[in-house]
Image (cartoon, rainbow, N blue to C red; front, side):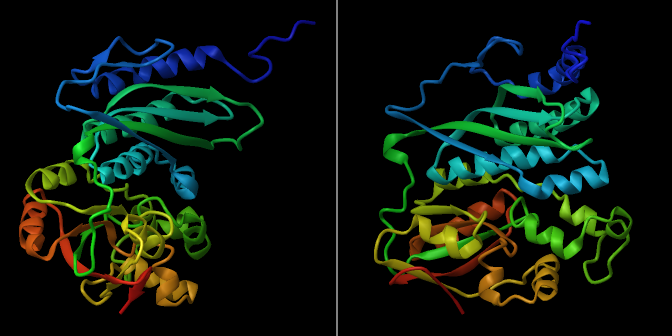
Length: 339
């Protein structure tokens, strides 16, 4: 007896339907550099003429176990924003303008409606960051993922003029660190988050007085995309370094932008830590240093500027809708000291 590909669990017709459903979402992200259309073996993008010495900056990332909350809530329209944000927020730290994005979606049994909904979020993230969604991969892998589950990851490429690359090399003692507030947990620390909040959708859907919201709504709040605000800032102010506060929190990410011999002091009382982080720190029974080494604690990006540029930087960021705080200063030494 013959065994077809469909008999083994892969239905190519579902794949065709998924492509049809996501086509308009993809097209909505196209910029003038896009060549061709969805369905090619490769995505084509023609670079503009804005840079004298163009340098490509690439970044790749996934959403991690935050996906579990999309599964239990059966809510898939924002998780794609997270996938884009995690990539484009990284590359803009070097001053790069995102050009294009590719996504990878894999599942055990393909639901065209679910994948199209996820891609609608990817498209929204691309529109927010100015990146074109020029391609991707949708993989049906029977027996590999639990029923109703999937994984998504992405890859972004941006461009910056070589003379404008932001690399932190000119940071010195006495420079100022400005924190740009996050939209919530973003997409890191969810292995611990899930232990603290669990995965019972009934409990997660109940209003929490201390949190001031339903936990599931807070846990699925998409990662904020900072691209437009950061690109506008670096056109107005001399920015020495930018850190995306992802896995490892303040402790691991901020020092990544410092040259050797430079550390910093962070005033943790300079802003009010959002309730979600205070609650999780209490639930976990961890010290402040551990919390700031796990979560973003309400700060999604940290920008380093000279003292003379602080007011101009904050004014510019606030003009683009960002909430900012002076977090602290750089100093001689190494690492991050929380005070």
